[in-house]
Image (cartoon, rainbow, N blue to C red):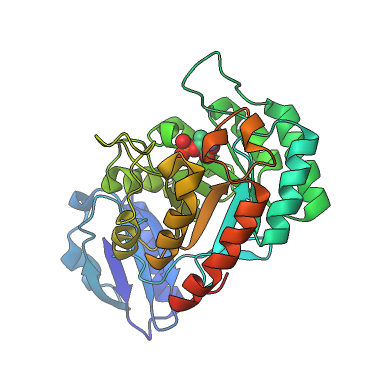
Length: 337
Ligand code: PEP
Ligand code: MN
């Protein structure tokens, strides 16, 4: 439920309400708005009748949160969440593009990718050191060595790093190197991983599961926020449907649906969403037009030699060209890139 405090409620009154809720076993999440403070209270409502709370000094009203996800919900927080990483603000009126290779393969490959995506206007460097591959015989990533290369690329270019963690036991290690921890589609409902990653204190990029509904995706985000981590970025990356012409079906309608129901920023990944570099530009443009807060795009210096996801990777020239073409679209929806 949401406890809405009067605009004139004193800090003391807010504290009293929070203390009482905590005593009753609720987790409290105060949100200090410009006009008034609201306190999100998550717990078993049976321990308290809402009427009793309304009689507390400073309380204006008590409203239930109807959605199964609470902290993620727009019912609790109407203002949009922005996630700051260095000087970049995800969820603001600046479109944030995260780009780089699917996997870190070598220092040369990564550093070259980092320079090229930065020149083109990307704000965050992506690259997997732990890869969740369908086949156990496929390249699994360079693990810590790859993380070190990401650090080196960050040092050389100043670009913050987003990289995936696939195992709860590696969260501590990945958090030492990553500016944003990625939870991949295959792990969207790995609840222990969500909790461990949430507790690492870094922003989390949560990709939508291959066959997950939007509600399941938002419930996964709730697991992260329930650890006290408010820095969650959602990423639509396509879902499984009967269509085989593309690797996945990129569900762009998820963007406005998420924005209607949640305050969290949402990115779109047209690379995994389509599985083919030929369709990446069209869907990236469409994603911005649909209102996405940013993009995640795979870029490889030589896609034909990539150890992972080469067919969907743009080469640096194509990426640069796309970034130019995105500018008027960002402008048309009141944003900049
Ligand atoms: C990736 O970003 O390289 C990746 C594996 O993505 P997804 O989890 O969306 O498949
Ligand atoms: Mn990939």
